[in-house]
Length: 125
Image (tube, rainbow, N blue to C red; front, side, top):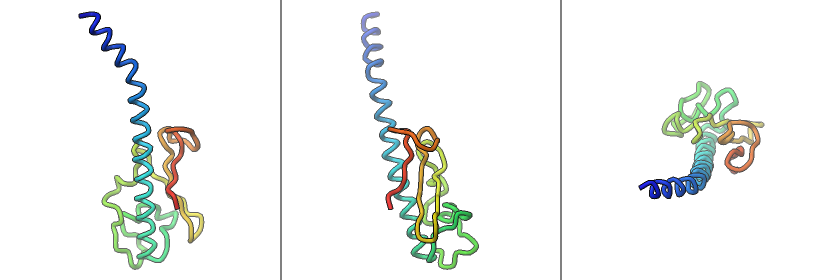
């Protein structure tokens, strides 16, 4: 009986790191898809309103109608929970000017930079 328990423990010790790595990669893929969805919602907002959400409005403009958004036909996302990444961090919205924006997740470590599964993710333009 002890031999069987020892074998099961060894198998678990070998497989656990591999499974944790798979979980990390799955969260990265999920976050990337989520960022693409939010970026598409920003583009729909732009199509309806004629401008991107301002920095002050942020991504909340996709869920709740802003005061200065004539033509808004949202909500463009089902709920505000779509504005959080798989690590429960806020998805960041950066608008450089009236023509460009970025939708960013800081990744698993919630810090700027990082590598591997802890890297920052940006929605493709």
